[in-house]
Image (cartoon, rainbow, N blue to C red):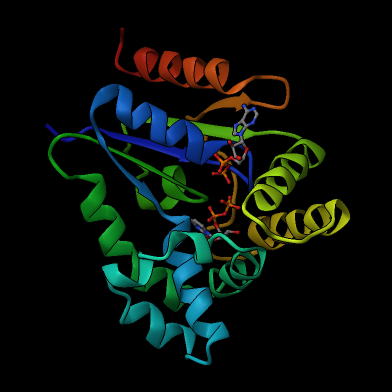
Length: 204
Ligand SMILES: Nc1ncnc2c1ncn2[C@@H]1O[C@H](COP(=O)(O)OP(=O)(O)O)[C@@H](O)[C@H]1O
Ligand SMILES: Nc1ccn([C@@H]2O[C@H](COP(=O)(O)OP(=O)(O)O)[C@@H](O)[C@H]2O)c(=O)n1
């Protein structure tokens, strides 16, 4: 049976963590759609033309998740993500994943609004920019990156503005999404709130 859970939200709000845990809870597949845009952004940084790179994207391009998670790849991702032809090139793959049998959780920016407007459950994860920057800063430092908190905060603000301000599929909650503000929630509590929202959507 196909059952789709759409999880959207800004950078470092905790949507990926929630998506992974919710998928494990239900035994569903999980797709981090940000990785697709990061892979196209990475290829642009290497000199490729972004629309052609999006059309030629292969599973192998998503292999090096650690490199794709850099701040540089994130900025490049949010630039190529504003190009309608790039978004169009990535649409079918995401929709096919969403309808896979056995259930799917997709996290990104436009899953509940554009990719899967008919998803059975929709969640919009938020947190203050300062809390998100603190989380991302710790994550980058733990991974060995040399960076400053102020730069991470600026990166998050730039991407928020670009992602919310673009004409095509801007970041916004779907009208029927449940919003979870994780600013003051630990991971366990945030995941429990997400599962409760899915259960409510299932009529449970
Ligand atoms: N509720 C939370 N409380 C504290 N840290 C969190 C919480 N949710 C996620 N994190 C941590 O914040 C960082 C970013 O989370 P992630 O799920 O990757 O965000 P996103 O997918 O929205 O970018 C990770 O290091 C993660 O472990
Ligand atoms: N469904 C999606 C997912 C990501 N993106 C873009 O890709 C960038 C990187 O997304 P991500 O989810 O990997 O970023 P984080 O939230 O993990 O920092 C975002 O800033 C968006 O510009 C998008 O436009 N649509």
